[in-house]
Length: 324
Image (tube, helix red, strand yellow):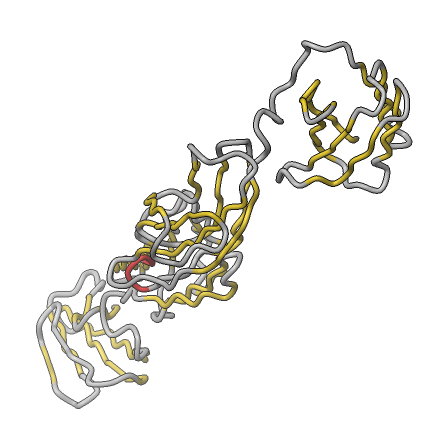
């Protein structure tokens, strides 16, 4: 026989009479009697199965755990172990199940019967809830936890990419129903900037002014609360047209990637050469003494740079340089 959720299950065969002796010495002659344990512990139950003059007796020690007096309770806790990487420790409170199935809401799951599990949440794919199903001999229990309602975390890993003369793409990691962003020229007062809303972990700003330094703040909007704004974060838009490659002039550039050098040729004497990084910051400038000029970027990081050639404040040519 077995016990589950206040019910004794009788698997006897070839018997037509039964006597159950319960832990409190009460007796039942039902085939499947009910019995309620008041608290956790180990208790003896005796079953005497009879048919005619024959009888068979079985005594079983029924172990009742404090967290499994019936159908499994799938309640679990969520502890944020790493706020920047969104690594969570999830732990089931009922430890008496035979199977534990976890769904994390970010297209990931675990069917390895882990009572406790660590998972790095992909916040870009997260759709509530995180779910746990527990199975035991009695049946199953299910529990859902919406992290957006229980946790409201400020965005982290804030970066900016794709900077042009009039646009930029902001990125971050975070858990929130929505995010709002305040943007303005460097030095603006929080509350006076332009406000943008998104439910994604990125936002593309457009209509920016070329060659300008912008600041922005960002916060998470959750179900019952909002985080404080974090920031300011800054970036500089590129000067007008510096991200556009022009071929209207005859200046040519020879490259020596091993030495990180670029030889500008067919220049006008005293041409001004300016080199910008992807944030629009000037990292190198020089003036040619004749019709050629060697630009040495060997001490700069590898990546994409932009150049502009000027003569008497008039733009002659501009384009991109790739330092490999």
